[in-house]
Length: 284
Image 1 (cartoon, rainbow, N blue to C red):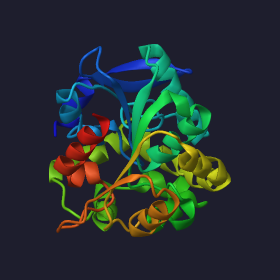
Image 2 (cartoon, rainbow, N blue to C red):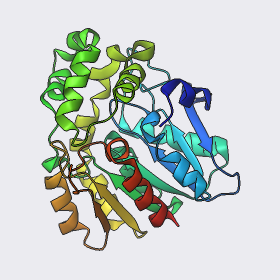
Image 3 (cartoon, one colour):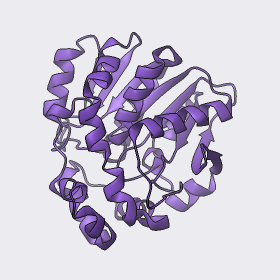
Image 4 (tube, rainbow, N blue to C red):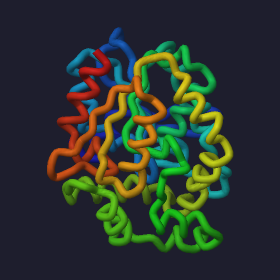
């Protein structure tokens, strides 16, 4: 996994819908596109250990930092929404000349992916999902997320520290990740005034409730191949979400990362070899 600095140096910024958005394109120009969408509260750097395997398999890999995340613009008084994030992904596709693409999404990104499916399922050739609240009724946000989402969030967000962030991560990881990785995750979160927008980004919790029927229908009616790569030790979106998926999408392909030590909420960071292998096989 390369450092956050090197990851950022390998990408660029584009103005999309009036916002400066960081993105990368790796792999051959003529390779089949695959778009990777990251989760909350981190960035596209989460995928840095996965991208080389996809590039080696011949894919054109598109990654971006969503608005308010990583190296993208983080407007402090902005009203963030999943719908806007989906529109930014579509704008990036247009700017890159990307038509059809495979889609891989994690955490917050699964809601962006579901909205993209709801808009134009035919554009997505196949979809892979990593731990996320695909069914919000059985998703369990951390206590700190609920607190930041409350009226106190505006005050608590700017007071957050790297130590507190590491403690929160320890609660959701099944396998340990490196100290440098955790530090880079914090840097991506906090850079550019990121601590001041955490409570606003958490509006996605309300979006998931308001659009649950739309997004669940988009997921369940999607006609293309679907893969679920899941860490069952995740206390947020682990076993209960996995059980719901198996019931509602019986034709989906499942890769459950339950080998000891069992993987948690960040499969692509905790168990990158297994995730890379599953994605390469699925996307082939």
